[in-house]
Amino acid sequence: MYAYRGHLLHISGAPRLAQARENLVSHADGVLVVDGGGRIVYSGEFTGMPAGAEVVDCRPAFLLPGFVDTHIHFPQTYCTNAHGGGQLLDWLERCIFPAESQLAEPDHARMAARDFCRRRIDVGTTAAMVFGSAFPHAQDALFEESLRLGLRTISGRGIQTVGPDSASELITDEHSAIALTEAEIARWHAGDTGDPSTALLHVAVVPRFALSVTAETLHALGELYDSVRSRGVYFHSHISENLDEVAAVRSAYGVRSYLDTYDGRFGPGSTPAGKSLLGPRSLLAHAVHCTDDELARLAESETSISHCPTSQLFLGSGTMPWRRTTASGVTVALGTDVSAGDEWLISRVANDCYKVHISEPGEAGLSVPAADLLFSATLAGAQALGLADRTGNLDVGKEADFLVVDPQQQGLLPEVLAAIEPQDVERLVFTLLTGMRESAITDVYVRGRRLSSVG
Ligand SMILES: [Zn+2]
Image (tube, rainbow, N blue to C red; front, side, top):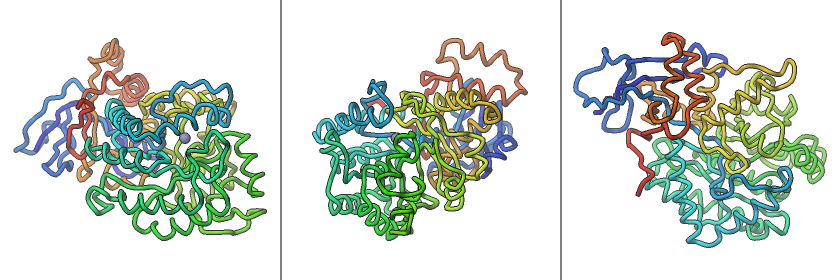
């Protein structure tokens, strides 16, 4: 057993967003005791620590739960800060589809998998929903590398059955789309332990978005997902990121709302045409332009939203309205959306989250509380990924996914933090979370194992 001594900060228990503040826990001289199986057996004041553990003194570092990135694109590892000359659809055609096509080359795909996983360790993203490559060999490389390094990864190959010429290498026919996804589930869902409840690796069914598939594909995906849902397989896609995209989806399917395409109602006039892809392990990125009815349906079906403010700034998409979306009861967690998001570090996304929502006009604007930002970066992500019984905070019984954050590794951060009254925990959390850079992350642990991005 090891006892990590430092300043513990996390959102304890199993709160919703509205209770995050009252669940904010701080132990300035705290300790996290982790057993040989990687489970937290004590979390609290150092003075109350049980005997028998070897102390690792991390002071003056903070111990935070590992960051959860609920939306990040593996085949866009090398595409951040790409100038597409326009918003979403232009950027996809000019920058992204050509770059993702390069993963057809196996050596390039292996290099991307290695760099992607190392980058995740550098920024402390212990768990992630990873939007995958179209190419099965690239997905194999991603899962193999994630397993080798010890990361918690949910991913699925990006499914496209229609699209522009620039996406031609990413497109398969309907039959192959389903067969390749079934093969990925068979090989990699709980591919490490054989049991989804103990696995670090899980598979998702991932159509890129409604415009990259057809009604036939959605029907077949609905049948497939229905057959694997009970095994803990995930569903992941994008929704309502951009107004041109929303209009194009309505026009292509003749549906009343974008969400209907993922909800089995993709027939003309939103008539039922197949099985729904929504549910507790379904996660949709963006939701910038969702209607109240769509938000209500997401909440009712327990589908979660990945909020990606950094990406939305980069592509000029607007922003997910924070008050209205969270008031609907839907779980909202943060995503980098690399590479439209040009920050890999989830706390930088939390920083943008704060700035964007304080800038929303009129009644919509608010100063998001520090605890809500920490919640959205950690425990809400675990909830969105259906992993909150295993990770997301530093409670006893959880698997020990945590970060050692040493302010001394970042210029002026110790001085900035020292100016805060020690008892003002919310201000401390706000300044640490929105001010920290990756240089301050000195160690990253998943299930008690220290991960290294070197080697
Ligand atoms: Zn995305």
